[in-house]
Image (tube, rainbow over all chains, first blue to last red; front, top):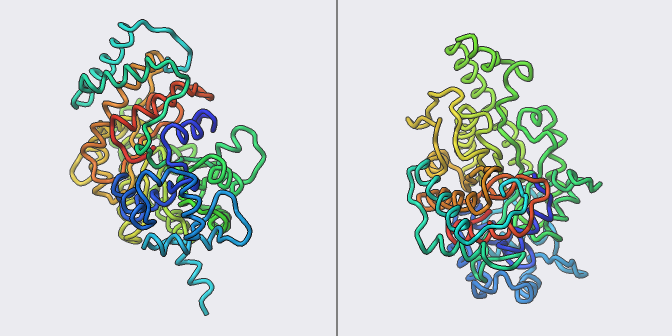
Length: 110
Length: 341
């Protein structure tokens, strides 16, 4: 319960990593895939992206990094990878298995 | 106040409520109270003359959401659930999202699972952030008139304690089957994780059933991500003698709940502290932070503290004031050192 302005938006600005504006989705994936605590997950992602931990929430740096590595952007520029395509890249860059990527590969292999 | 109404407090009143809040949690949970430094930090947060506060750079955490897709529709925005996911991902800075059905309980989802899977599969094609499928265990749906088993609320006043307990035990077995069935289908459709939300809403049978369902799913899918979010701070003893791994689940507080969650195979635990509408927000936040700090300290898995409306010191109001929510968000992250909200 609670309206999105009072809950989701307030928490996102007060203490969130910014999702795709930064590397919040990538850090979340390490918590989910490996059960990493927050600092371990941030360090792991920063090392994989070859950036500093503080850069993970910087939208300018992360937009460049995400564009270079094909990890998906908030603003879908022409020709860049998006959606499922980006998740193929995320799985590869982070060295994890993503369930829907595995399923997609199984579906299109023949 | 805990109900969201604005009040003014003298410095001495603020200090007193912060001290009373942590003391109340310490006594109730048999856990350490906050230190003087932590109380001072809370005081500074409440005394700050700003309408919005945030954590220091570098201390940001991951956000997960329960029933996120429903919250867009709940405010009357006419979009479908995939569009709601995209709104959270692209407009609201969400680190993860959750697809959910309006019924939001595993039992009613079971017969329509074939309609839910394609929505998840389509959503996964166009989104980027990790996507949970979530619902409530909701054991209240398993007793008459909503379910097949005799209603313990009718049996107990008649003194039929054994019969009431038997009914709860049968509900547990049926709920486990439904949770495993729905979760299996969603994992086969590609979900990044399953969120058991509002666990324990129907008391100790609800919590036990969920732990057992998690155990089964973890064996079936060793890499599965399971988030288990609680309904309340205290597991109500509706049955009173249900045990998991030898531990009686009734009466457990968050710092003990998380130990059982870990044993069952939960990946991310979402503890709850209820907001008291009759007490001030400083009292509620001091109390909530005390409980959550103890939970984070003993946990070996990521902790995403519940801070939606009515829990984690967030006010009980449809439109929570952002001065309180942002202060609660900052304090909870900086003092407890949790992993997410």
